[in-house]
Image (tube, rainbow, N blue to C red; front, top):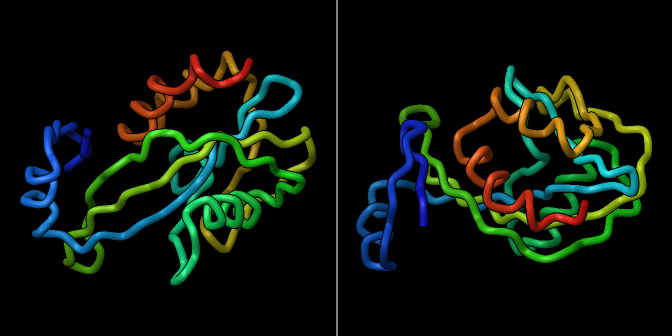
Length: 160
């Protein structure tokens, strides 16, 4: 497994090594989706100066897949979403009011028909757009290292 700590990848080889690393952090779970439409486009959002895939925190008692669908819909206004296979989780660290956080994001492949999108501006999302599959790599040049690694890992497996 790979954890992005200060935007640098750290390879973790065992559950014991993960547990040792994680003990210094509060763990937060999030969930989201990489959504593909019938026009061979991928759904992306632009938030706080970076390109991203829609995702958000898992609520108490919520299943990861349920949270992923909810967050994609809330952040983009997307409807008629079909949940696909789970994708690899991503891990990254950050600080929130001085507290060290380790966030695990549970990702899912999703499909939806092409439709107008509405960015959730209350969550600092300024754009929600359909990006042609071949142009996602360009957007990923202004994204987070954990998402760039995820995209490299899964892009060939996503239906084109």
